[in-house]
Image 1 (tube, rainbow, N blue to C red):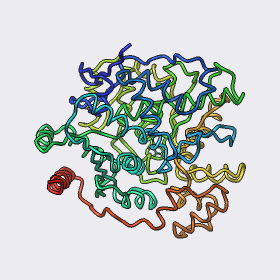
Image 2: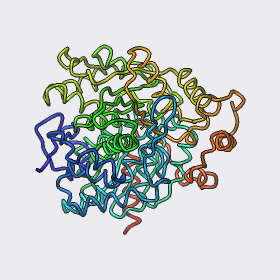
Image 3: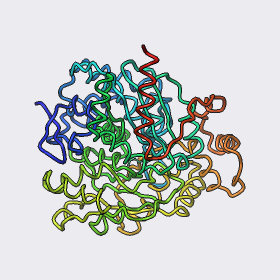
Image 4: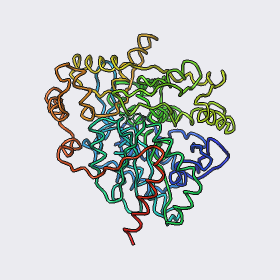
Length: 500
Ligand SMILES: *Cc1c(COP(=O)(O)O)cnc(C)c1O
């Protein structure tokens, strides 16, 4: 059966491939599937499948206008030896939980899970829809998306990619990864502002009709690699199904046994994928939403009021330093009874006053979720204690999740078996990880910390880190948040001259 996508803010519907191409609906809403399909393969079959096979079984249900051949070729092109393990997403048992390691791809953070396949999906979608314009991927990043998107799109014909990141809001390794990006079709811009400024600027460009016309005349069209694109969301459902099936296979859980899932959350994309997996029939009890000190989501789950009017805090888990969690709109839409008028009004209140409040009936539908947060000190303590107990080194984002997991267990007494989404390699954040383990590492230069991390963890240094040691800087553009549009136009027009 054909599965179409509709906007959260109007009655517009499109096919899966069109939703991937557009990224965002013209009315400013996000695309959501008209229904959540049910897993149609028995768990015992899934338990025998590779990551790639699992990906096909999950994604074919959502991307119904892709042929089997197209989808399998996208999957094969994405989940290959860019990942440093055949398992793609291995599971590590520690601290009375399973850490689902989503950081074995090209840029050593979980964004690779979706962004290594998005370019393939997008090129296929463009062919299907007879798009003859060049696709310009416009992305705001809190540190990991931008690099993972560029790694995916670099030198992909028919595409260009522009990435905006907060100049002073990412880790040194993250910044170095971005400014050394190769590929003639890539453009990296630091902005004077935070991630929300970058994301707001990008959304504005997407909604600017005059700009769209100007680009159209020049042979370009925008698309998005941010987690608002359903081409990001759908591949993220896969690893929850895969993790569950692996645990069944290993005899750690019985088929049908419910598990809890903890997700360190920023833009609400990763945890929404877990929610979709649950709605597909995966046996999941609680979805535990872990925030850092930017705890908008914790407050939202506790009170029913979403309020971004607060100070933006720069933490050691920068990819979660977000006050506007874009993907929450999809959940709001769902719990409003799929009411696009209501959703639009709430989102307008968010962009107007910076806050909105949901009704009690809506709040009652959030029972699947539990929200909490970890302070900077708690995050560091989680890194240290798991290292001391199990010799396992986790990154600060994952540590936020581990800390919230402990709060949840002591608050509720619920000891349901639990999977923690482990979203980044500690190598990406050695500057906060190592001092958390031992104060003697405070102030040490980055690459010395990386050497020390290798020694204490016994985990090989990822290729992505080794390459950084010598990679030349290729991108030096910096602008103010209100110059983003002009910066984009200048670069694209310059590129066009170069091509003539
Ligand atoms: C992006 C990111 C997150 C947050 O994921 P969302 O889908 O935005 O909630 C958490 N950890 C890391 C390392 C990330 O890169």
